[in-house]
Image 1 (cartoon, rainbow, N blue to C red):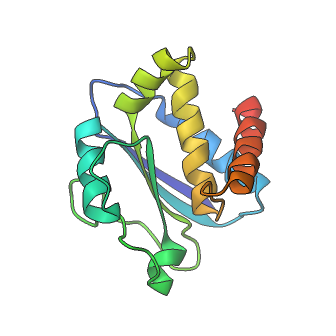
Image 2 (image 1 turned 135 degrees about the horizontal axis):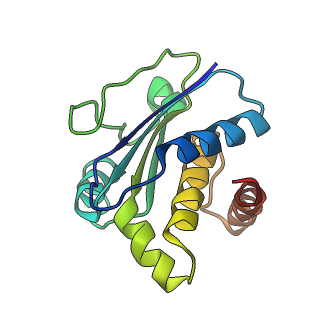
Length: 159
């Protein structure tokens, strides 16, 4: 069973939680995941910047932070998703959980203007991007970015 827990902590940017849950499940199923738990939270630029600084050492707001549980279990991640009440309590079991995703809905709002897309499209893209990271896709090298963009485009057409 795929379980998705979503919280919107950025009340000035409402998001369609049901649509987001459907997107997460579509991507996971298409990538062969039958059992998974995903925790997702929508934040302001200020909050995501604080988490980016604390957990990845980067002092700037970003669009998506993804923390695969696999990395936490192997203790290879630099940091793990905060377990405090500011975000959410984990609802996980070790064998099912791809991990946790934090998304800046402020960044989606501003990037929608920059890229001439809608806020909803940017949110869908960030959700897909985060889930792909949880599944092991990377975007550090050129080849990895090409594959990531292909997957994002494929799932955006289905979103």
